[in-house]
Image 1 (cartoon, helix red, strand yellow):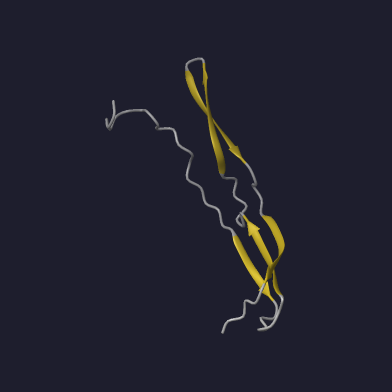
Image 2: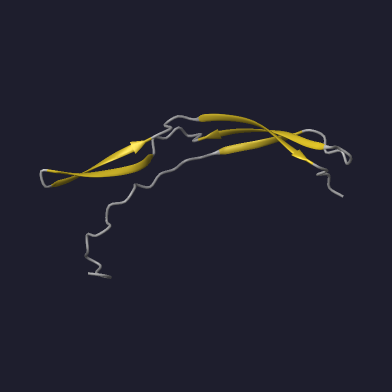
Length: 92
């Protein structure tokens, strides 16, 4: 029944979650005449360390539908990267 407000179809959803990702760039000199420009990027994925559901799987067990949550990265993950750009990126 398309459009029926009492339909149970598609009522199973991933629960709401909260995640905070933070990053910052540390840049060096922005001299006008350089062959390349580089910077470091420091970041934290899932700063709050919450155990959020990534996926929910449903199985039919003896006529009952059971949902199983799959959670990954339930702790903060720190990242560091060094980025290099060729060319002049100084502002005029």
